[in-house]
Image (tube, rainbow, N blue to C red):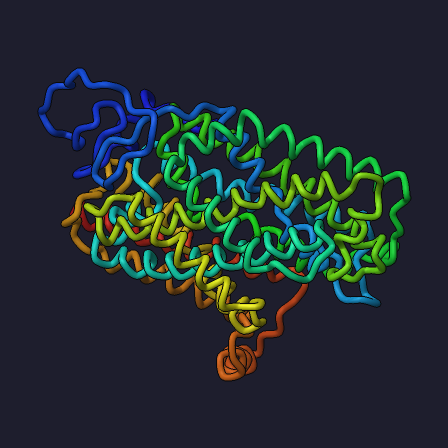
Length: 476
């Protein structure tokens, strides 16, 4: 069933202590609606009414651009599987589609909640955990967004070096990418409009061109008939989609309707990510399965450098999202600080860090993955409490929202389930601990044990049980 509009769910969209979407005043306050000039840009501080300017086409274009990634092309290897035991082409494509649809549906829920409350992603957690407890996931999200922001600048620089056929000038490409990223974050809604009007079309043309050119060369099927590892590949695609969950509300809070936020993010991101990973598979299989040579397939077609350049320039929307959402997260801690000061400082920070780092180590990449696994169960708790628990009558999103420590329990439980099924290899002691727990419980991960899905379902059920218990206690 499509998400309801604000008019049909006024209770769910209301929030105490944060501007109501319809009036700009705190929900429940007896204040008159004053005539005021309509803003076309995002507010500078947290507790200010966000302008509702984004339509379905804006959301679709934004999330379509975010769904295409240079990192996505190269990480298509994780879907295909290890050399010698690759999935069949049919199984890999099916895993891409299934995992993307499931993960993006979760993304759409986060987008919907942001559109209803009008609050950024981390500020919504005030309603779930209380203001002080919301600082914990907020800090984790800041670390995650800064890390991926640096990673994106390195990726853009590497892509630019590939197009330019040079190993030098890396510092210049990093600085230019950092400057463009920072400029985009100063005018976020204007940047989204530019993405819709100009960039989305150029990206679609480049994707069509590469799809046709690579398709004409034929696509080998190294694992013909093999479906072993299908659910693992599906789980990986779910994780990629969910990575944007803690960012979604930062943009959909500006949506005109919850319906357009949900369907715009769901359709735009689903189409783009499926297309990106399938194209990545095609390029990977034509480069002997070597992810380090995947862009050689793009450069091998006529005028490939030009269309690859389009995709490299477009990658700045990924770094834009990471920097802007970092600033939105910081505002949950420092609500009165001007977001332009924050985005300027964060843009400078990731640029300096990218200049100091040649490439991400596997340990740090796994660390970012560990943080990412935090947000799968968090979304489950968030969604259940919003639609079936306290959120039904309006969350308290004020600066002094009281703590709700019980809601932390299902979140921690979900994180433990995720690591129990698929320990993130951040360090030997971490993996050894979870492996010993598996042995103690006589558990061996199977192909059907999806870490993402179980880490979503278990905390969702636990939150629902706590909600039902709270209702019975209130009645008695």
